[in-house]
Image (cartoon, rainbow, N blue to C red; front, side, top):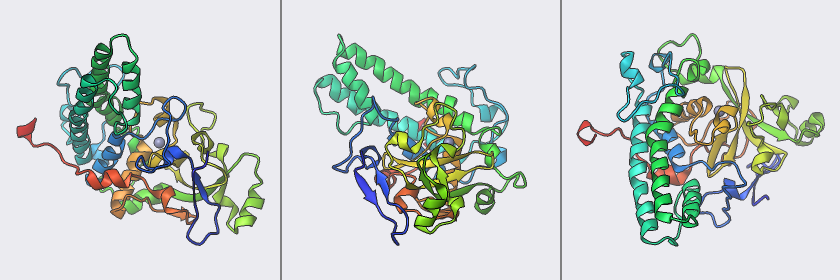
Amino acid sequence: MTTRRIHTSNGDLPPLSLPPGALAKTDQRHRYDVGDEPPAIEPIEHRIRLDFMAGSPIRRSHLLDQHNPWTTDPGESGPDPWREVGRSKPAGLLYAEASCRRTLAEERRYYDRFEANHSADLDDIPAFLAHRLEVCRNAENPNAALKDEQARRERWYSTIIPWMNLYHVLKRSSYGSLLPPSVRNAADIDALTEQNAFVGMIVVNDGADIRAVAQEYGVPGRFVVHESDLSLNTVECAPLPSDFGIDLPAPLLVGEYASGSRYPLLPWSDGLVCSCPYKHDRPWRVLCKHELLAAVVASGEDSIFLPVTQGLDIPHRARRFVSPAIASRHTPQAESKTHR
Ligand SMILES: [Zn+2]
């Protein structure tokens, strides 16, 4: 399964062995199967991260006390939970909502092309949508199937992503659990990384002898971990690095969070994906609280690479949070009122 081996600059850690699904789409060796592999990081996910990186850090006063995405549907124009409680929406969220609208509009060209020619090339289309268009192609009535698909995608961008995912993450009980209690308003990045850590570790197979691995690479044993000791491994939907086809031992970035859990950030789809159960329980979720924290910390570094705040000096690829190709093309912006 390994397609690329990346060695650390000083060569004293095991190489990072990446599967084809972790490579950039433009890489000739990129391969990805929607049916068999974990969800790809969609272009909108990379954009939303860049949006939160461009917005100022999230303050506790920005967060919602209550929001139940399952019981209330916002409807066409939808109530704004921030306006309802008299708080201002974080800038990153305004950018992210604008990105959803822009991406939805940009994707219209894919449907037009498909409608004009059902056997049109799908190579440049985001992986999940390309897969759904394949399904439409084989449907009894491809144009009707296409309309359904378009409506479904529209609902994802306009309701599911903001209302059911981003608003939920921006709650005191969600992202708020990662903020230091002492910091009420200022979201000081140093305080965030004192409370939460991004730790460079060697993740090993469950059968491996930690002490022997630590000795082999000359590293402290506390920075070597069995993959199933990464927390909540009993939750079925929390995937392990090996579920992504990453060969072990692997030098990876492990998030250790103020909320008491720790999850590795796995190289995937040209960026990193958090392996927590919230993210993987529902494939339509594009952001978890850990990824939001990572975006805020990366913005403090002014970089698409996350810092190693403790532990081993892992390869850059294990810290690259956002696809460089998407980062070079995306400009976070909130739409002006005249364009709404
Ligand atoms: Zn997470």
